[in-house]
Length: 281
Image (cartoon, rainbow, N blue to C red; front, side, top):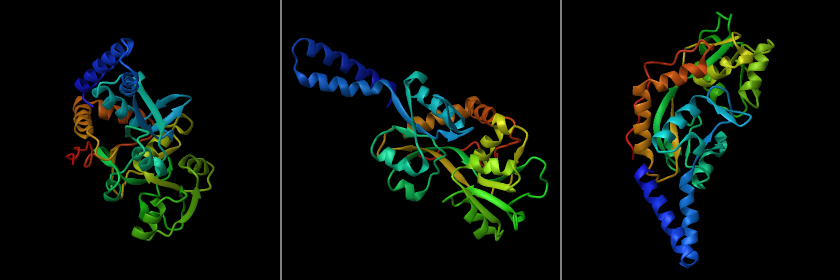
């Protein structure tokens, strides 16, 4: 959706209105309704991940949100033209296939399986599974140190399974509906560590209510390439990748990470980041 194309669409809309006013018939009205869709862009994000995609009473914040805003601006949209849509993990492919959103920024890892049904731009960040522990914990330095510890993850997540399968840690798993519940349990002393992607953990630790209580261990043991989800056959990929590269080059990308993880004692993996977007198919 390049700016020039939308300029043409806007001109077409004006022409259609003029024809309709002159008795041009119902067809002109239908075209106008279609063209009006170019006045906004629908972007899927998480609403419940502090530091990434978070809904604060209709105000949206987080690293994913900041990247989405930057990309939308480069595509020719102002912030007030963005329609934010909640994109839970289990519903992302459906939102794209039914065209309920134009793109998704929601800790959406690029995988070959997902590429069968959706397209991706990016990646715009490479995360790694890590551990969140209490700020004064010096014992847990990685997944190998979890044997006999109480570990929390979200029900149905593969995060805890990876630790047991790949590291033989044999941790005592506590499952919760969300990571915020895991953090609450750790604050109360019921568990020893929380595991998921490092930047998600950093966002949780950076919440004002959690400030200074927790830290990310900083020993990631996987690679998760966060991509921009697109409908299959979308023509947006190249323009989005160009915007991501520009955001990185201008320093706005790193600034967004710093602002959204402040107070979490978090440093992104500079061997993997900033990423270089893949070539579009």
